[in-house]
Length: 265
Length: 265
DNA sequence: AGCCGCTTGTGAAGGCACGCACAAAGTTGC
DNA sequence: GCAACTTTGTGCGTGCCTTCACAAGCGGCT
Ligand SMILES: NC(=O)c1ccc[n+]([C@@H]2O[C@H](COP(=O)([O-])OP(=O)(O)OC[C@H]3O[C@@H](n4cnc5c(N)ncnc54)[C@H](O)[C@@H]3O)[C@@H](O)[C@H]2O)c1
Ligand SMILES: NC(=O)c1ccc[n+]([C@@H]2O[C@H](COP(=O)([O-])OP(=O)(O)OC[C@H]3O[C@@H](n4cnc5c(N)ncnc54)[C@H](O)[C@@H]3O)[C@@H](O)[C@H]2O)c1
Image 1 (cartoon, protein in one colour):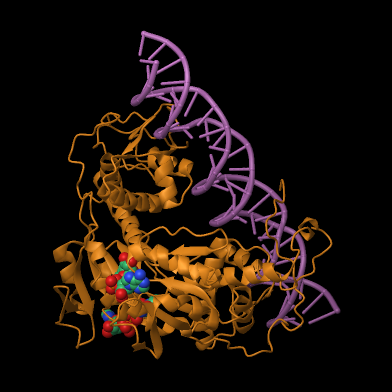
Image 2 (cartoon, chains in turn yellow, orange, purple, green):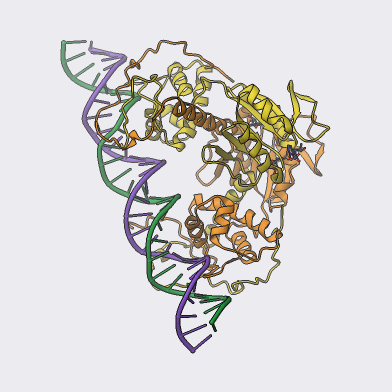
């Protein structure tokens, strides 16, 4: 719509065009499913089939795919192998992305030992920690180095992605070192909000937040289940400015134990 | 404005009113930050401060908070303790949510041993696996049971959330068992799309997808860096309706080797 | 007591994303 | 070679989310 921005033939035919972030995430899912289908010997898939397998609307899937070009065959579907190839190109998987992992504790060990990354084009090629017991050991054949080596090692090995699995308080410092070393993409597992320059992309994996979103749904389901009729009153806009009447909560001091888990860490 | 559309609008006094999902996720982040602020002895915060600390727009933050009620004081800000209390109420954290974890492998071990969940109101109270070497051991004081006990144990302990950390192929089966046992919220770490009834909420943590999104940005940055100006032309709606002219793509058969890493795991 | 400055809460507007529905384009069968 | 069928690619309406901008409300200062 807004910007068709004709595919400039001059520059390579790649034309990444701006793909909506939401679509990028789904494209990655399609790609994985296509890999499985290829293993099962599938030659072609229709948008309907692929959509069902990945749990999305088929129109949305087609629109997603349309962002990377027109590689389907009307009346038939998509060639699995061709689509895999195009998706890899569009997602930037034709260049290997070397990954560094900082913080080799409980979570870091699991991540370092996980074969699913390297197998998909994201080899973990550098490990860092500060614990003297960890520095020097090998995990999955990779040496754990001291964090002070981050700058040199990342530059040497052309690290493009950093994964931070240190305790929260250490994360910002590590982040700064990575940025300093030229790393422009960071995946953060620590429960803190990282401050970075504009050109650096940060994604956060926050499991506690995931659980809280689920908990919210549990609570909602419970309320809906308890109160028989929850509709109708919706249409009453005016009358009530009645704010929440919870008698207890008065502006500040609240009665019950303030720290249900208030000062958790 | 058009039609109310039976949106499940809350009513009860507690007024959970339907909070946008995106806001729920941020509310959880605000809550954590507020916990830290409380530790540091902060009494009140302004939306501007909290927004800066959590990396969001302050107007968005205020709107998010407005979904749970009006607990701010104009000219001053928000009482930290009161806001914490209200957020916990709104997010359903006044009820403890017992969590079950299925699959105690590399990742599962890290999750089971993580104190950050229990400390936030999500105690992991049940562990399951099929590996005979694991069934029977204790992790963090929790017994690992065989998956065949999922139904009984979940019902007994009032499990409301299930976390799946098994290999992909086993995930759907485990999911079915959880649903059967009455679990209505699932956090899935396996790289598969789970099929569940409508009333069950599934969230997926997919690290490979996270990396691919980052890789996409790496690729985009690279292209932008290489070609002098790829933006700007944005404002050229010019040749509107012209269909996509990607010259190369010939409708079907594509030349190159289809399987760059097509059949990866 | 009254004014002033600060901060909240929200109306309104813009943008993005979703999903329907359909024309275009290709295949298969006769 | 033509008709019927299948499936893609996308224009378009709808609703959600974000962001701006400002009136209203509150505390502090004089
Ligand atoms: N374990 C989980 O399941 C889990 C779940 C969600 C979030 N997290 C988060 O992931 C992070 C890591 O969790 P964990 O359970 O592995 O913790 P952990 O304590 O087991 O591991 C942390 C590791 O980081 C290292 N470290 C500490 N300071 C460092 C520094 N300045 N530079 C480099 N390394 C440093 C430590 O030596 C240790 O090896 C934490 O922020 C945690 O909140 C973990
Ligand atoms: N380790 C990581 O860092 C990581 C990262 C991203 C995704 N994942 C995904 O998380 C899942 C677990 O990864 P992992 O590295 O812990 O694997 P793992 O092989 O170390 O652990 C899997 C565990 O599940 C158990 N299991 C197997 N089948 C089971 C069944 N039917 N019921 C119950 N338990 C069963 C196994 O006994 C094992 O203990 C995988 O789906 C993996 O793709 C892991």
